[in-house]
Length: 453
Image 1 (cartoon, rainbow, N blue to C red):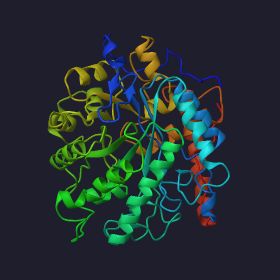
Image 2: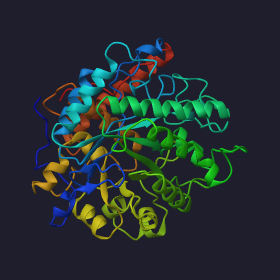
Image 3: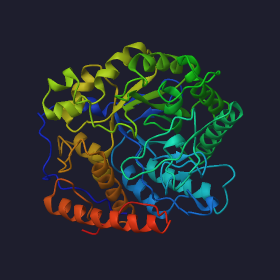
Image 4: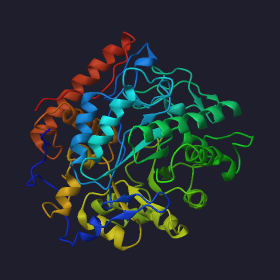
């Protein structure tokens, strides 16, 4: 499959000319011994291209040809590690319709074989392929699961056109079942050719929900102190380790901060990171935010206000990583969020803020961005016309581009191109109208807009 690519001449962020060789250095993961061929990480993004059936949960979450196509292109992009989008541990607690699901009770119709095709495609050029495993928790939308479960019964307010049900607090027995399901999915990912898994402990989903004192109000062994709130994470890691070989990598994605009072704070994450290192977690990806606050960066922070706009974005979570990384001696640290220029990436490595560079939305539409940077073709991502603080537009643009790549289209949305962006905006308006009409009929469909350029 021929890889679509943005022109080198596209409008891009300004970057000083720097020696990018440091970005091409290998990273050896300390406990599994796996080696990432460079410092670039393709962050997990919700593709929403797996099979979906509104009424029959057994037909949800299987890998499709479009997903294999997408990961074939990603595999040629020059990443050290490629993360899958949300791989959900059961077919009910989805982040969105169209998520992939690996569950031991849903193994018919060649489901694992199709996952193997995806993993093989992602790894074809030497990248490590890691499956991000997750549970939607209270952030499962009401039209998918009106009765979600969470650490506690703290409801998420409706927002961004999404409605959420009143969550029920998991019983201790149910938490044990969640731990088992994470281990099941990790074992299946291993059998399907993944090099490792990443536990999704960020962005307000079930694990982040347990970690945050704002959303975890339990009074038993899974609530209260940080040790108790983190107990589910430790149990998941240990359950996975009991199922897979030692050379299977286990990582985790954590919120560096949620920008809201009473949330998980950097000191908590620092202590948790040290605990995870002590039990053999290879690497930690730091990100932040959840559905309650999707700010691109904390624009009210005094340190952020001192920087110009591009550097604000490239400082996204580095300040928190700078507090956490010195506490670790083995576990590797990646930071995702805001990186747009080779200059900013190199500086972050040289300053010791992070060891790895996570790319999300810029790589959704330009999956060969690492290869272009390392070869000296470009020094930065395309300069999107979308407001960087507008999560919704950026998310749909990324999803639309991923859909185009999966469909094999030769031209993919370039958000720096005025004509592309205008056509995208028009199509999104139509798409929201279509979604609204479906909602009135009680219909739930999967996927991002179809866009032909």
